[in-house]
Length: 313
Image 1 (cartoon, one colour):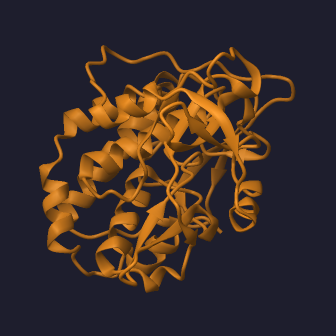
Image 2 (cartoon, rainbow, N blue to C red):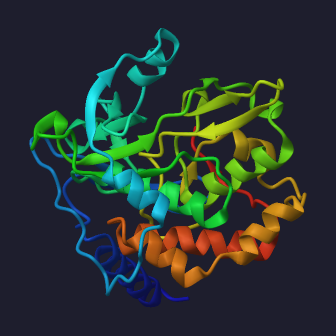
């Protein structure tokens, strides 16, 4: 390929990137070239500025499930104190305003208002008000489409009953689940390890550290893996396979050459790709972030195992 062809190819990539992210390759955007080839984009929010939400691409026909709809209809009412153990993880989370609240139906919920989303530092997607809420809902819809049950029911909420804005305004609501700290990734059953590895690969998760998964204990002594806090997933990139990821569960399974468990393969095979694309784009994700997740899903399903990934150091 000559220099002219390479320049034209690079220009076409930039145009496509602009069209699918709704963002300009200018202020706050940095293209990072890796030593072994490939590149990715990092954004830093310009001081005093918040980018607008991406324009919707195409017509959306997604109808949220009954579970998600019921979550969205809950009316948040009363604050409930976090346990001391959980409070430590809350303070390290990507949102600066996380509240545990009881809704008027008596249920306990996690509430993250859009106004409390933290965009300090560098991000693998273009920050805008509500970007983390979009990603939290998208992660749940991905888990729901696969039928894994690893992510608690999550939806968009109008906020606290009787309030209109600020720390009580629109954001994310998620079913609160009583749980303990995350254990070593290897201590969970193989199917659950692989389920979270699959989720993290498809969503391009940059932040599956121990504070972002929990352990649900049962009376019979068994325990289950619970995945939370997905505000730094679903990156935007020139290439959906050139996105850095960080996950204890990817470290266990990615590139190991072992096929996924039969029940996980069956779950992947049941997913309608067009419906998955619709479910993700309907949350407000850009077309770039949506199509990137769908491409990783299709590749993983074809490969029948979790592929190699770019580790975020």
